[in-house]
Length: 72
Image 1 (cartoon, rainbow, N blue to C red):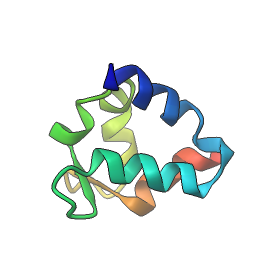
Image 2 (image 1 turned 90 degrees about the vertical axis):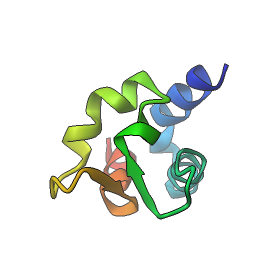
Image 3 (image 1 turned 180 degrees about the vertical axis):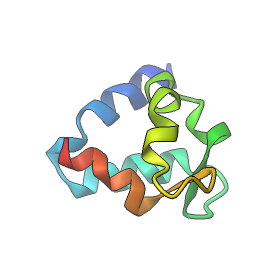
Image 4 (image 1 turned 30 degrees about the vertical axis):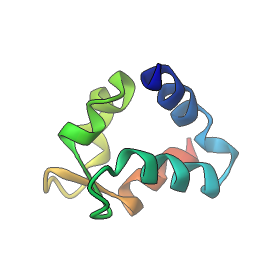
């Protein structure tokens, strides 16, 4: 049940920064302010674009990197 909700939420991130922040927080299970590939794997859409979001190629997606979803 959680996967469709997160996929829908990601699709709706263009609605504003608050939505993206809430989604990021929900995905960041260990609360380290970074999304790992494992954390991102809960959503198939996010898992698919994880490497594209990881612009500095450190293996994690930061809040700043995640925020590009707001611009799409």
